[in-house]
Image (cartoon, rainbow, N blue to C red):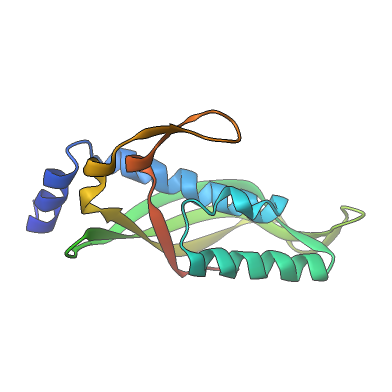
Length: 167
């Protein structure tokens, strides 16, 4: 086991690769869903400002062009951890998401097919970096979501930064 991974486990005894990969898959799908629905405010709590603005700009462009990008039959085929780096206050975990989806555009009003691949799934690779704060355990507090009332474990929420994204 690498020294960086050992230090990560010291700061987060609950860390497991399978749970982390599951979180990555869920986050990735939520981002794509927010782009399809145009409800990007649903993801602003776990993406950084730069990423949020990038997605907001993409969705705005689609609205201006009277289209919706659809990711039909979306699934994550694999999440590969590329690296874990340790910094003074956090760990940065770089991953590559291998996804497959029917990726096409429809008209915003008529919902008719415009362009893209709606016959066979396209494979894409997206690099994402998750930032895990070292002192998150000190801030572990359970709060209620003001919208739905669900518990929010502040320790489990992570900001992420998209290093590259295939729009």
